[in-house]
Image (tube, rainbow, N blue to C red):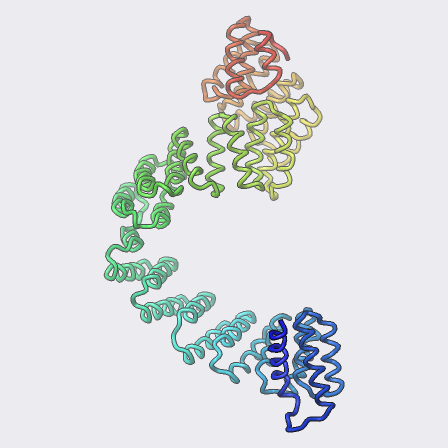
Amino acid sequence: MQRWWSCILVMAALLAAVDFASAQRVSEKAVNLEETFIEAEREMILGRDEKAMELYREVLRQAPDNAAATYRIARLHMRQETYEKALPMAQKAIEKAPDNIWYRELEADLFERMGRHKEAADAYAALVDMTPDNALLYTKWAYQLVRTGEIKDAIKVYDKLEKQIGLTEEVIQRKHKLYLGLGDRDKAARELRRLVEAYPSRLTFRHQLAGFYEQIGEPAEARKVYEEILAIAPDDPEAKLALAGKPSGQTREELAFLASLRPVFRDPAAPIDLKVKRILPLIQQAAETGDTELAAALLELTTLLEEVHPGDAKGFAASADLLYFSGRRSEAREKYARALELDDTVYPVWEQYLYILAEQRDFPALEEAAEEALDVFPNRARVYYLGGLALQKRQKNDDALALLQPALLMTGGDPGLEAELQCLLGTVYEQQGESERAEEAFSLALEHMPKAPPILTAYGLALARSGRQLDRARDMLRIASEASGEHPDLLHAKGWIQYRKKNYEQAEQLLARALELGARNDPVLLEHYGDLQFRRSEPEKALSYWTKAREAGNASQLLKKKIADRQIYE
């Protein structure tokens, strides 16, 4: 430890030597002054800034022209982030020792920290004149010019640096970005071409140039560069994909284009990201247009991705999207599940998977999956909503509220999502028998989306289930029906109004149709259909549907009592 301190003190003495006159013999005053300076250095190194400041000021009291002490005081102020005090001291140090590079660098740094970018640029310009071999100073000078909007002057600085040190990747890339900022695409491309010429074997630079030409809408120039790449590396996958052609917008030609991609898609050396990027626009097109022929051709390629890259989730997710858009929900569900097994960090895959479970009305699976998704994405309000939906359908109302109420704080100003959450809260409150809170929640939902069929349907069903305001519920469902047509939830609500009015034959037609249209796994509807059968003097059939409701995930204590007693309770 003592040896370490000795080295520090020797260094401090050397730094101060410029300001302490050397001679064969020195006065006692000079010796004392030097000791004070060294003690100040020690205090500064130890982080005892106040004591160091006091000692440096003592040096200046005895030797006002001491530039080193002035500089140290400036650095202490900068360390304490009191820049308005540091700057004058740095400038005084420069006045006393104008050729000292360290003092001038401190001034430039302070100008930068204080946001005085024009003065910082001037300070770095002066430093470059003093030390033209210091490449870092050019970069700092150019950066300050950029901050003041002097882009062309910043480019000139990099030109100077290039003359000083020669062509380098870093300087060229910086100039390329600055030309882009000016909107000068030709010069931006020229810089990348210079990089290619300087490093002809570095294919990365050629790919960057080709990609830039594609970005600015010059496909012919991009093609030339890709051809250059293939001349050097005939198996380069990105170049081969790029030269495979472009989709034309005509289905037949798009199918031919996709067929041309198969050899590259079979190549395990070709990165999967490049493959997915190549077909992503067509996947989006298939989703928007519902073109099943295009989707089938794309599915052949995504299936190849699964086979060639079995450990990567992207191929399975892409296949799942195409299957979903093609109406093949069960197959899509399996693919999404596989994608999540491989990589559970992609939120859109989770959301799509959860929505398939909701559409299939597999609410036990939806509850479990939403819980898993929340472990990965604890701040996604839509996951809370879907988890709450599963719990509501399973009659786990307290658990549903525990998810839905905090989700309202996470909507991020999305009125649609807030309306969905309020609507679901209304349904949960109604199931708990809290009519006033249910009314309030449904009213808030309608404030955001006054004529949304799902909200009108849920509200109407809630009114029907409670047996209150049946005519109002009927009017709501009429409006929803005009907007959305026949839908299982709408038929369920209409059927339950007829049930409440004891029109059991009409209720039978409506609820049976709801089950037929895809709601065979809905645990609430199954329970209601069982209730209807009991009222129609079909107790065995009632028991059968109550049992199905329980198997579908309905955890209601009242349902359990119905099954145990073979008796309806409402």
